[in-house]
Image (tube, rainbow, N blue to C red; front, side, top):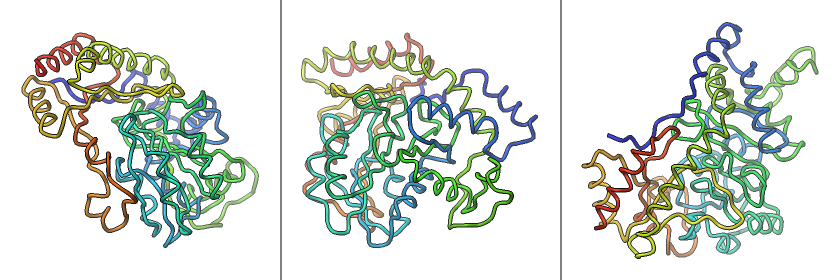
Length: 375
């Protein structure tokens, strides 16, 4: 069976974990955590990056920094992972879902303004498949209504919008380093902070509400509990695992891009024949080959394609069930406007295997089976 995903592995991960263990500093914010933070800051040119235990926790941390309270409303797409909504629902906010664009599967920026009420506190654009939302339009709306923008860039590391790294355009950005992502620490994430004024508070909340970060920098002679917070600090061993991959980020991205391009170029004839639709990359966006998907005619055809590929030892999968149709989505959120594309497009989309080190021969075999199905 050709697996849908194989977690990235470069060969140095265990060596770096051994170093972390030998340093007798495995609880977090040691050598490798700092190296990961610095790598993200250098690569994205963001003011501050803080490694977290997950992208979910990075988003929760952003929600706290944005002072999300019960009764607030947060605008987001329904076509996303549950964590996008959970981070705000946990703080008593209502998730307000708007429809997506059928070309990028991202939130339709032209529907956001109509969903704004006097309770709206934030906008959460989700950069699906590492392809940016229209951030110019979103930031223009946010500035007009004085709203916080929290980028869900879980899939967006190494992607840009008009040359600017995803996760650095809004007030806060959130990366994921889950095992399914381009770079992985098993479970993990990072919070990107655009403005200097938010850095100290973020460090305090991330360290259980203490000023421990300032203590370790020698800025104070003892640390204490100064604000409400939680434990969003990952193990140093997880950071060591991740850093081995960040060192080879360009190589990993190039390898994934090679597979993505092979898929796209080989399947373009099916798209031109009207059999399938392929991913759309807007002119202002560079993507990171996080995933390769195609769209079938409808749900029935997608189900048949997935079954056909599975019978041929290829693990292909669909993606999100729109949140506004889920039990919790009905309880904690609402859909503003018409669901013209969210459900319909979600039922057509199928993802093909894509991971670092996927052999060209296997990719070509997958392509041949997709073409066979459509013959």
